Length: 124
Image 1 (cartoon, rainbow, N blue to C red):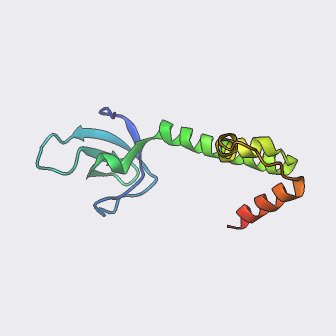
Image 2 (cartoon, rainbow, N blue to C red; image 1 turned 120 degrees about the vertical axis):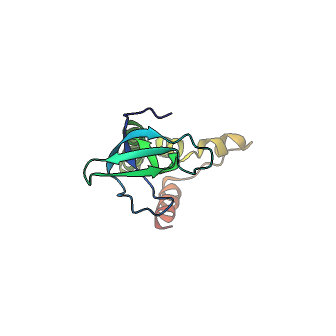
Image 3 (cartoon, rainbow, N blue to C red; image 1 turned 90 degrees about the vertical axis):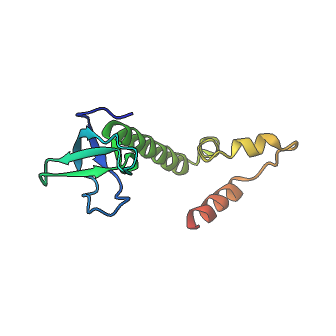
């Protein structure tokens, strides 16, 4: 998954080494020792240090940006559905259509009931 020289972001500190979370670093070596828990050696230019790390502690910047963009777009769509009272879009985003389609007799609810349910879920 990772390659030498690749720019990565530190997302966790599993072994409590004092890693600066959220900082960028570069993979400078791979630890192939089977007795070692660490898989990579990372260099963090901002603090001018090197740390041995496990793969779970780092992630690619591109993947983090894609996840954040998907989360922000989903939240924006939810806000739009609530602002325009678009029940179909809200149900699609919340995954409620699958439940409705599985019922033999779909129950029709009024707009007031729908808004009351949305407000109840917003408080939870």
